[in-house]
Length: 395
Image (cartoon, rainbow, N blue to C red; front, side, top):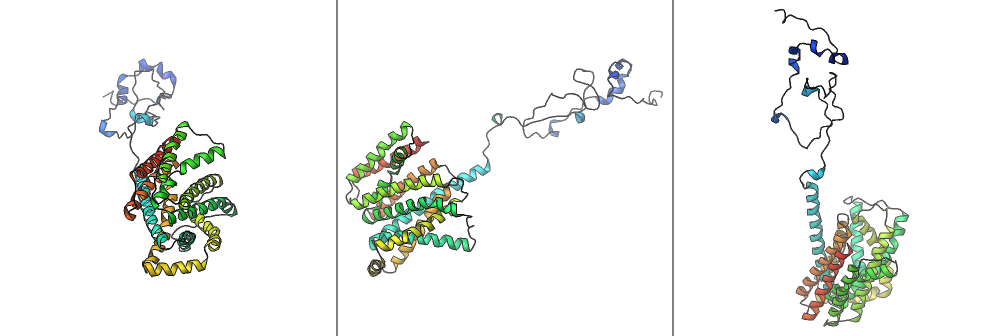
């Protein structure tokens, strides 16, 4: 009874002198400090934890690790934890990354499909209405109209631009206009497949212009990849049954113009925060302003009126649909390609552009039943394969 009614004197455990008096303290008083063992199910550990030993002193008791007689209560331990190195944890794919890959795949498939449809309708229009300057102008006009309506109805957010933006965009628009018209002129004279085989040589023009005019240097693999590109295009051109010098030169000029477009775009658009969709929309509008007076001067309304009557009499109302379709699909495929640049690297874009040419060449040969000699097909395959090697070496 004396023990159970004993009133414990007040002792300050923060006083270090109590360590020297441990022999006078009854052992039974430390029954409450027995270790508490937690079950494994009570702990929810999501990431590995590291317990810091920088401060092992039990707050409020004054006992350190060196004093082994006492064990700390779990509730009084101060734990300093940090996340373990990621390299020690298993690789887990982030859901957002998987969604991004699906999005890029959709962009690529849409880009290729729209480009194939555009080339088919564009060739149909040019066969019945051989006026590439007006056809090129209508393509830019349709795209500009689509974007102006989208901005006006707030379907798409209008870009915030200033005079410096349009000044930087001007050389890009000049090069884009020349490349667009030259490619259309080429397709009005030769088969679609031949135009795209020659346009596969664009990487060669890019390296030559960058080396000669900009003083850039490239790895040896890049220069070696140009050999199959140039050789394949040359072989395809020599064996082309419907070879036409205007068509050949149009594709070559288009290559050169698009190389300068890319160079001007990289230099002039640094620091300009405009999305890919709006960037191409502004490019279309400015190119339309530049192209319209030249189209009128080269061909003119009288020539267009006569050609229109001939096309309607031969094709019928379907010609109007062909003209509208080629204009709409031209804008859409370019818009999707620029939108994909927001999500992928230039290297991936270059590879996608190579695969796009393959789909266009094959589909146009099948649809228009273009006669192809085995040597011509071999040259096309070598050129396209060279562009793929170029994309890998450029990395």
